[in-house]
Length: 505
Image (cartoon, rainbow, N blue to C red; front, side, top):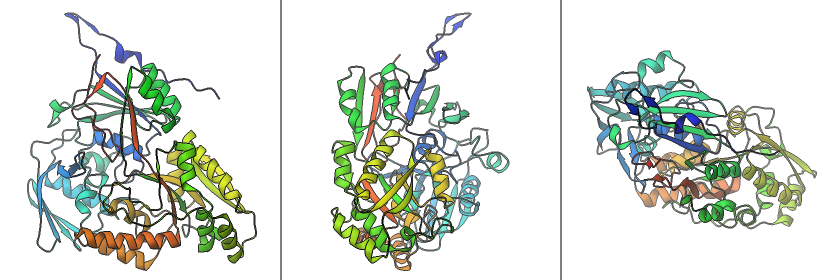
């Protein structure tokens, strides 16, 4: 199939004629994304790509700077009680939501309670330490916790801290038309094509944002995104492929920005989600999962697919994290993999069906893995799936093995608890190990870095035995952009922050 670059909307480039002469052209920033975000409700959203949209659309209670330190957002300051079980926050005044509703302490209470109680909320496990939210003044709240939670503030820098307009949220279709208080408000969405936002004129920090309109354009193929960037139909794009880095650097109209990321790619095993896909040797036999992992050469994937620019992984904590566990990655061992399959009583070839995102890079990785594991007697059946659909299948247990990643969080809890805790909202494989649950809970309840690091190392070591999730590699965040774009700073969380960015005409 021949791909053609997406054509940009010509209206954004027109100079509009008015009765008094020529008016200034509308300032539009076009952002390329590797996939279409899922639903635009912070309670139920789970894609990395949706976080780009939420970053422009929804203010959070707190945020992070480029060094991943927590900084004020809609909360201007905060403090914890001596026992760590009460978090007090003072809120920013003079903030309104996109529909004109006032932001205040009652709005915070509404949003946090919604994330904790709404059916299907993926934020429940992230902020499960919250027992109750007390309004202590028009612009002050206290979060009463079941136990001390060292990760809670960092969770509130992301979707769990995104504030929605209470009235509009209660009566509207949030996923189709979210109403927040961020610098840009929702205009329209065409699935698999574009999401359009416009400047919110009543934004409390309006002067820091310089675009009249933001257009997010999902383009799964990295080479097609690059072609659009070269043609001028995108201004900036995430996810420049490792194989395209030299092309961007050699183009005098483009520039490259990159940062070591927090995210990983892995293979999730359906161990107990439903019955159809869990009555399999992969789900039931630990030795089968160990054999599958031993048949994969993670360093070879990095060299073949990513030209050595990625980092092999066996855990969720990136090497840039102080919580990266010193646990060696097992070398590929086909003989041992075959022996483990025999010990598990499995007749080969063993067929396993794996969901794969429908972008060329993921497909290439999957095909390399398919060839590797075949040497151990594993027949990997690849099912190419649109990414949001893949995540939906994962959530509902409609998979045996699924290839999906996580963009990573500054606090380690955000990259592990939801996936490996038996109560985790993103634990799609329904992995359950009481000892792992206890270690994860203990790590939440202490702020001592050394204690947390030791607890997380315990989890990583146990996970490498049980293997409910086979980690493959850590991803750098590589952005390509027109040289007309100024003021962009890459963050380790991989998101595009629009504050201070400009675009020359």
